[in-house]
Structure formats: structure tokens, C-alpha cells
Image 1 (tube, rainbow, N blue to C red):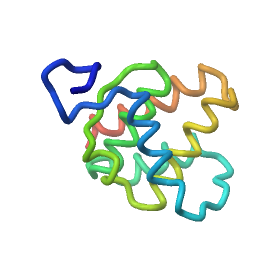
Image 2: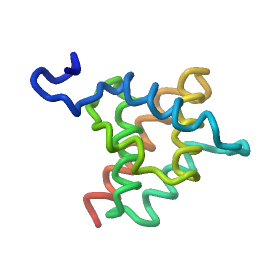
Image 3: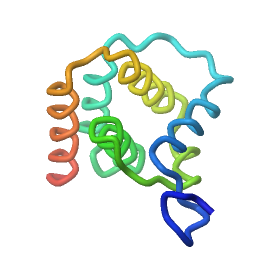
Length: 117
């Protein structure tokens, strides 16, 4: 069972989810994504009701606020492009590539796009 949600076998913490995404993405050839935060927001705004967009928004929230729960199935819900974007976001966060204010702005904008959908 996951330590993040007692009694729920399918639950992953945000850290476990990130680890699973990195594992899933290790075999794919990835081109650098020049502006991952902007690309993530653009993807969400294009199709805010789609499952991948909702998952990207949840990942943005997890990276911004260091919280969140995911399911094992969420790992396979991202296509190759969205997976590469997710990994670029995680890499950027780990490297301190953007100020916290930028993370908050993009995360809030992505959530707003979902609400309007």
C-alpha cells in the first residue's frame, strides 16, 4: 500500500508519481522543450477538458505546492509529447529554472482554464 493514502493500493504520492514518470520516459528520445512552463500552459489552454491537460494541471500544482496524489494509471495517461513536457517541468523545477511566482502564475492560469472549460 502507498504511504500517501492508507488503504488505497492505487495511490501514488507526488514524489512517487514523478519517479514513475521519469522511469516511463527514460526510453523515449526527447528534444529539449525551450519553455516548458509556457508550453504546459498552452497545452492546457488549448484543451482544458482533456484528460492529459487535467493531469498536466495536477502535475503543475504538485510541483508548485509540493502536494498531490496520483494513480498508477496516470503514468500511462500521457502521450509521448506530454510525457516529455512533464519531465521537462520536473527537470526545470529541480534545477530552479523559474521563480516561484512564475510557477504560481502558470498553475493558477491552468486551473482557471479548467474551470472555464
